[in-house]
Length: 125
Image (cartoon, rainbow, N blue to C red):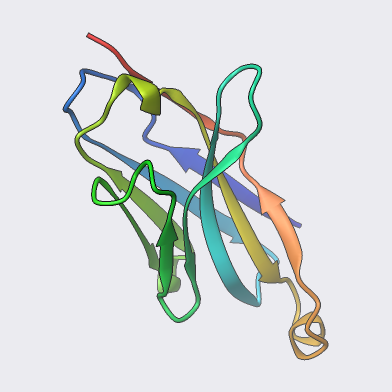
């Protein structure tokens, strides 16, 4: 089994910054990609940022230039640095990891998706 644990969510004023962390543990052979998603009540979960095993990144248009995703492969941990936060960034942020949990799965190209429990980010004065 694989567990993802997010941390770093908080209440912050507009214009402020937060850094979210996502630590993966358990049966992990190789993480192909890690993504940060967010969801507000009544809306679908949306992709905020993602990073693959080579370090290539992509961002939603709404956060480009303000958010930065990174990962520490040795620690199986991903980060989301969020700057210039706006009230519309308020949401529950979820971490996703797409990975091969065994060497057999890796060589067969078999990937599994795992999600964290979410961390609340509230941007308000």
